[in-house]
Image 1 (cartoon, rainbow, N blue to C red):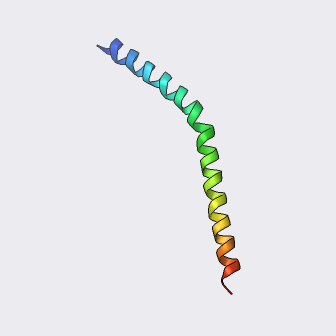
Image 2: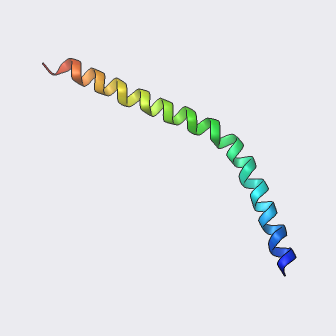
Length: 50
């Protein structure tokens, strides 16, 4: 039974690391894009308000 659990855990870990390899760069792009969006909105709001 322990061997089965280890095999499943190993397989899941391999899939997670493979997914993380794709999600990592995507997450960085998303975070930087949202940060840029927030900064842009803040800058435009500050410019509009007297």
